[in-house]
Image (cartoon, rainbow, N blue to C red; front, side, top):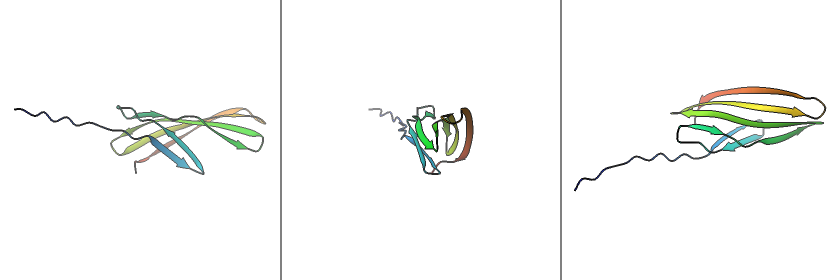
Length: 85
C-alpha cells in the first residue's frame, strides 16, 4: 500500500498592532491579507483605517490606508515592513 503525504498550510488571521490600534483579517493561501476597517476618533475627526499586505515566509509587508472625515478631509497611507512573530 502506498501512502501519500500531503502538507497542508493552515493560516491564522493576521493581527497588526501599534499605537493602541489593532487591525485583524484573514490570510489567504497565497499569503495575502486584507483587514476590516477600524474607526478611530481624534478630536473632531474620524480616521477609518484598514490594511492590505502579504506574508512571504517570515516577512510581512503591509500598507495601512486612512480616510479622514470631520474637521478635515484627507487620505494617507503608511507602509510596514518586518518579520512575522
